[in-house]
Length: 452
Image (cartoon, rainbow, N blue to C red; front, side):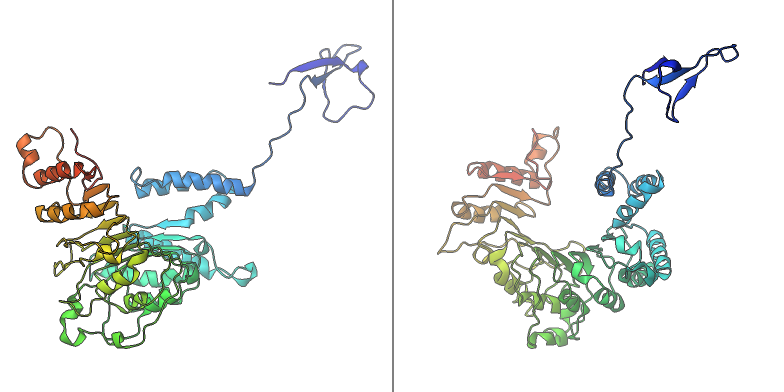
């Protein structure tokens, strides 16, 4: 609180400012005197306003803290973000683009309301604003539909497909698209995604379910990839081997055509689940992928499935890989597991992490360069047959540090000693004892060692 002093007016100059405060302690006296109220401390200037760039950074950190996964539900996170918009008009103008930047929708009703809002705003947009794209559609950079689950062949699934076909053209600056395997895009939706503006800004496509047509050569998904030169992460799944059961489609016609190459210099992560072959996979096989380091693929041997491109794909791009995950979905039909290549350590000499799938292959090392830099090896379950294979490989794996059983968890403390030594738990502990001599740790699905 500022300190104030009283000074008689007789000691002040004739010219006084308009902000001067006069006190008259004896207002009704015959000769009333006046006292001037002056501050004893200097006047404090008003604080300078923060620039909008700093507010964008601050509110960006606030929204990121609200959206920490596992701590709050999607509804509570959205409510906290909406409360920020109600602080004042200035904060609302700054925070509104941040609010629409990450659109995470978990229900059909929220997706419908979001699409109708963007369609209404786009109809009111005009060319006078000198911006070709309407708001808030041009603010959306991430569209996340991971939690939007719908049953196959249901009416909701068709409605979601129709809504997405109208929504995607309104998101020209979208850089990340996250779907899930319950949404199978129709031809109309794929064409809408292919022909939208801003595909050159798309950096990530995840969870895309492709209903392959093995007869038609034209593939809208392949045409989409040709228009996404800045793609860094691609994840899609197919229909497995069921379409190949037809003898007429055992060898797709596009296999005999000249391959179409793709220009994807920034593609780092590629995931192709339940896809023995497809036009997009055929084009990726014959394309240069200089930045590819992480590959997740379902193993299909080319002996029982002649059309399979998986072994050829691994051998072609394996030299650049640092992480290779062989994965077969558990809820697929028919539930068949095909053997993996035994020469993975030959074709992938720079692997850091290798994740195998059942049936576990009998791995071999290269005779010319026997030492391999592998550090992490993941298997579904510990098997005594594979432990023998691993023992023979350990002299050629000097950097191996961790063996992970990704489908097994250690029993909690307090269980009996018989339970600890029975079944998979006993096999896992035997692995730990034998590999400890080589200074190799054995961990479970949570990357944790056994608790005492």
